[in-house]
Image (cartoon, rainbow, N blue to C red; front, side):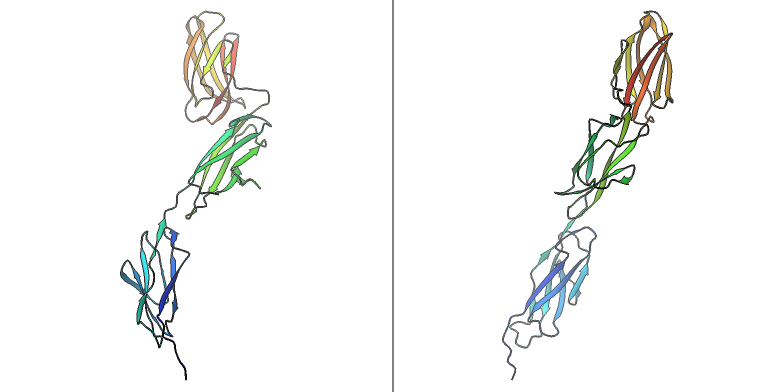
Length: 280
């Protein structure tokens, strides 16, 4: 004799990878019954409507979907024919790109051999985002924190320094921020005043004002020349200085690369030289 106990069937279910997923990700719901018998019948319900049959149901959810399982048991001594599972409510997250800003100390223009500290400030990165620093698109070994310190930049060309940030949120996403690092020879500093002239602002975006008076105090023609550290002229203009007074607005354009430049004012035998930093 075989004696079966009387039991109430239970329609358990599981969801993989979970009830919170990224937009566009598929989930698998699986039946895990108790006292379902040898051949139970499963009907999957989504938002109150039949959506599938069988022991598994795979689909791509929308946010707020409500799913449960209806199971008809063939257990011999069942106390009910059909039972329902608990309801699972799906949450669907939309990926958010991290917003990455890089701060440089002492700045993006440093002397040759000077250490520069770059710090990535991240929004939408989660609690513990992953960092990877690159110099000129090449990953730097071991540079995997939010801070990158180096004095190994190149002169006279600029180095592109990038920080890739991957969020640790439910929907992981990767974004980046970058800066250009420019070097100037040791001992050279950024000047805003020379020979009685002033340049404002400095650093600037290629647009600045030169004010001052020539020592002769007479009408003069002044040549204004902007050169890079290789000696290439990137901007040149001749202006009149009535009574030796110069008050000239310079617009060197938006196409000039970031970096250190030499600004020269020539008038007769007089030269005034500034070191100008351009940061577009």
